[in-house]
Length: 490
Image 1 (tube, rainbow, N blue to C red):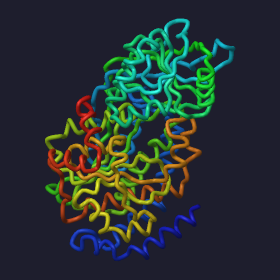
Image 2: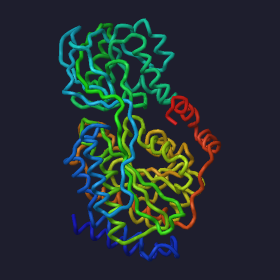
Image 3: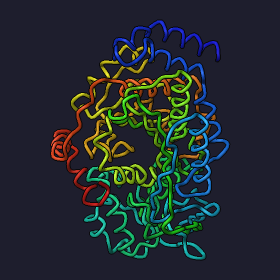
């Protein structure tokens, strides 16, 4: 593995040697980007950082003891690397949540068998003895459809699946959570999410309304095969009865910290480039890919820039957000805290698609974003990451979202989604799925792009609020954006 990494680094050096001068002849030393890529890949620290985080600390539910350990670990790592202004930035989550033992579930009628269930994130505990009731399938969770089914919902356990969630997602995430909350308001005893993951696994949805608050009725994630069984029984006219039980620990109004560190630029008046990942994870696995690889990449990039003795024109600000899984809470808190100074933010880069070798970047195709990537195309092509994609399909599902809404130029790393989605929010998100070579390349792509944007002589233009709305309308996203604004997400 070491020999293969050195061979790749050598080829990068040959391919990229003139690039530093080509990018910014008066700023970057010759070959700066190739040196940085080689340092990241040959150094290989991203893999070790991810191992320490995933295996050494484990799952990192926002506000949990493990999350606090991860914050302390990240602060110590950034300080050991000699970064400046390493600090915690606090914000408050309405509720923290943590399962206190496994869930149990059984089908009681028309026959008896055990079912495969885990508590949904931010669900309240069930009453003593559990929740028992007949199962009703809801084909549409939009509020109007829930109201129309009120008579059947009252006193029942409601089953929803990917098909019934889809209309709500299309209407906007705020409207989707309105419908889910309405299920409880109409008197349902419990809620089962059938999210298409096999029995014995789970795919955490996060029943929080994107606010970090506890849901208004007990909700669990049901295995795929069990979901299909219940739907077949219902289709045959049977009346399945289910009981489920679990206990969760809830703490109200808890302080959570983002982690911030900087490599100062040569020109402190030139602003900063922000590169970020999220430190929190779900509890089923250890968050090695979501988003341990992103956290590890940021640390490896910081180490490599320091080791190579490089200083960009602009400051590079590294941020590890909490609360991403509960609704981008940490990044939203950051934007609120720093709104007055966001004019100094030249660009935001987010890595949150796992540690696969990336093919390029998602952008919003705003003025300057694609041109900036084109300017470093030889460097990105040498790493196999020279593609540029429209990021509007993902704009509301990553920590780039509040920055996009604020008009800041944003870049979201594009990595292979197939392997990532097979373990995303599931027990299989563990360190053994991380490929050392691919993670090294991914970190190099993020590092090279971050340094290049920080060193460019010209700033990328940002959008005024009215221009943000106009652009989202052109992309067909204005309805979702307005829905999220109406629900306090932006």
